[in-house]
Amino acid sequence: MSVKAWLNKNGVFDNELLKILGKKGVNDPTKDFGNLTTKQWEDAKTELQKARANDDAGAQKRLKTKLTKMDKLVKPLLKKEKKTTKKATAEKAAPKKGDKKPAAKKADT
Image (cartoon, helix red, strand yellow):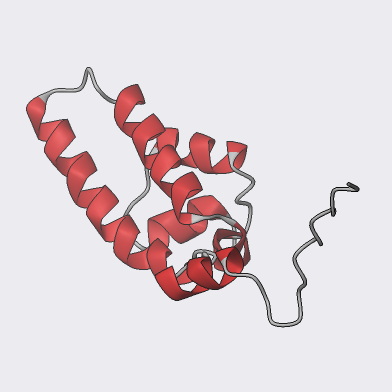
């Protein structure tokens, strides 16, 4: 399904959004949103809001509604980012068992 058809089907079509998604490499939303990270999606939304910043208050409200609906549709499809936990970070910093410290050189006297 094309991006335009998908946006129309879900009631969130916007010409500027169509262009931005094309730049982000989204040609088939059901597959390509899985290649976007959350950060890339947030960047796309920010870019759309900047492009539409000069619109009147009514248009701004409609855009906000569309973006809220898009978030609900897109977020489950986005690439899952790996989360680091405090435990994982601490394990990386701690020396492993069996690792030997370099032997100190003995001074010849």
